[in-house]
Length: 254
Figure 1 (cartoon, helix red, strand yellow):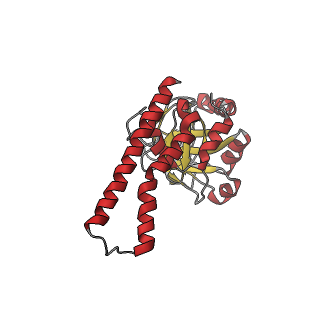
Figure 2 (cartoon, one colour):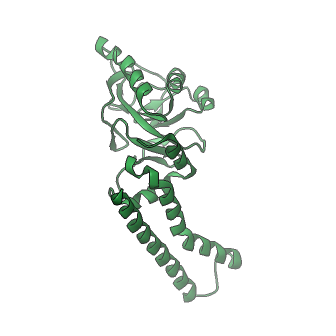
Figure 3 (cartoon, one colour):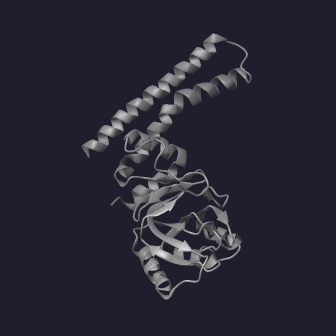
């Protein structure tokens, strides 16, 4: 298991940089491992969260059975026992979200249990009360009622945002979205993030430099300007290839 300090170090980078860096390890396709559109950061903050997942499934259409009521204690125990920092990931199994599991009460409970955020395919509410707490909502919608919301399953694989999330996975989330981070790459990921930023430097730095000198639109230079741009892009590609070789090899050696 990685350390809390190693996870905390990832919060100095944004989600797109982490996604770019994860590609260097060649562990999965570039189209895998992140939640698809539909689940968004609800609060307009710059907060980034990272942690181990506790998981559950909820429904709000029908009243809970006695067995389902007993799942509440099992769920809270699972959140409590999940390594910290903890992020809970909840699948709403109703045809469309109708009742929110999330509000002021649950946000306070989860903060008490050491959980910093929820990622859910369902809805959230009590926005004015929860925002000042610093507890983060990543959800598909905002709802007004809790309906008959109850737990259906605890610490199980859940399908949220087009992907399956297992208990005790590592997730990172910010205003751009949510990405799963393979545990084995965490010790190397900050260095890979810096490599991702350095790979983009030739394009970003040189484009900005020319713009500051010539203004927009750039009216001088003709074909030379375009050739310079393509040169910078080739350099970016070269740096990305070198980083992929480095971090793929590094991970395999470990």
